[in-house]
Image (cartoon, rainbow, N blue to C red; front, side, top):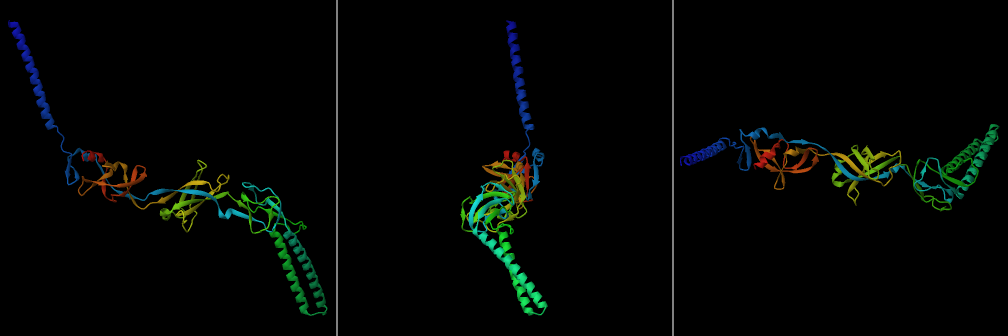
Length: 381
């Protein structure tokens, strides 16, 4: 009887000890929770967040002044390759006539002095006849002057007779020179016989853009364009600047044109000239650059993607780390009055500038904002 009693007594004592330990632990943890409770880190007053002096956040918040900067922004516009106006030559025939020979084809490369076509022309026959007549008249008048000088030397005539003969000689000489120049303008040598053939020669090295010349064609209008030659060793790229951006572009600004049809091909050059007026249908002004094209790969009417470095006015620039989302709005914490007194403010930003953004509204240069650690204020907001 005594042994069971002792066992029950020992078990009761063990249970009492365990319960006492549990009570002591609870009391200890409860006391510790009150003694170790963190001090208040933030205070709030009329929408302002105040970081207390003894707050651990003091070391985790970075506050910096808002700066302004003038950034070079790449204005991207469409462009098109064109032949330079000074390197585009219209080929006209100096006379009317019949095309006897030509091998000219669009896209053909020609060199200065190459014969483009041969024409049979009655006008050339007439020009040869005029030259022969002028030469004969000049020879005759020279003989008349010589005789007048001889007669005058022996007193057989008056001085006015020699003067009249000399005047006729001068006119004959002028007529001969005119006839020679007429033949030269017809691309023919003045010492050839009157075969009546006009040879059209290329005035420049270039590419045949178009031609209407063909064997057997009769040319009845000497003012009509028969072929167009383009010198594309240097081409012009026309960039279409929108009306609202026209004031940002000026002569001398760098321009980078990427050729759409030739990946990796770029043309970097300063703006050469800008048209004085906008195109009424597109409301764009054309800026021109010149691009060397030694291999001829750049052809007229190819498209280009043009980027022009333009200067923006002074803008507020802040780091991206200062931005917080709040109810679908971008906000920053701005220092208001005393240090470590902050107020949330909505801002509007523009395109990326690396690790920074451009602020369009909501901030001014010189204000102080939280640039790092703002999320800590946001979490407690």
